[in-house]
Length: 143
Image (cartoon, rainbow, N blue to C red; front, side, top):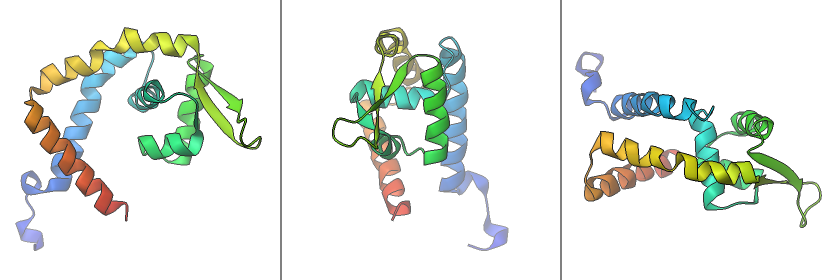
């Protein structure tokens, strides 16, 4: 592809970038009600799926780098949604654990993903196909 052939509308990277930005903007008003950012919401969803995890595992699950994740965890801890506890397996390692307030947040925010699905209006098959393609791209870029 030469420079003259660049058409943003035909670039996969631009389609992914602009879609991701638009989706995060759509989440913002909903998440603002709970004083959450999108990265904080990702961490909470990961913990609702699997509580009591090592920071390294949480980073792997959310694709947040160590620096970003550290800041997200500090803010979630300040809001009393999570606690850092010493691991029973490795005293040097910290485990991230949901507090009761953090567990209660799950029910309060459960409508957010459904609301977004209604806005996007993809069929189940389209959603599965898109997710699969995104994971395929991600796995190839992570090599």
